[in-house]
Length: 224
Image (cartoon, rainbow, N blue to C red; front, side, top):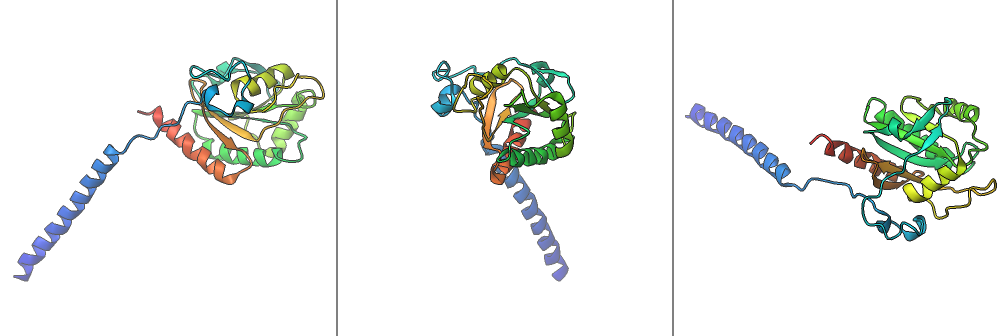
């Protein structure tokens, strides 16, 4: 008799486990898929958006660019074709937020080092100071991996226009003059279609966790 009930007890446990798995699968299937917003100029704080773009509600993408990296190589939008990437703006002699931002970007680099779909892009806002040798020195000091991360310098006007009109990342467009300088703590997540999918405070560790979480959501969206 005990053997008979023991068999039914075992069967009951097995059925309970199977039922739990089925319920879990149905629950997950019915959950709405997580998607990131596609940021348009009209969705962003107007102070961060050039007046010519504040009304734009769709089709905003990062403009073409041509800049020089820490190895003296030309870097354009083609180097980021069909890639997800994280962009920011910095300068090598910055004594305040830039060291924290760079440290956090290195942390992200470590997380994506084996992911061929994700790259990094840092723009110098003092290109007159941040020559190729200066960027290379900084890259070596900070542990920048050349295959994953470009530190770029070049025409100041172009960099400032990218910050203001493409990445929607700064409150002033400046005039590109020698004494004019923009600065922002923002990290910007860009998808394979060159659209902005998120803004994050590059000095905040919690924001970095959110960025990595959002990056995983974005990567997953290309697998389906």
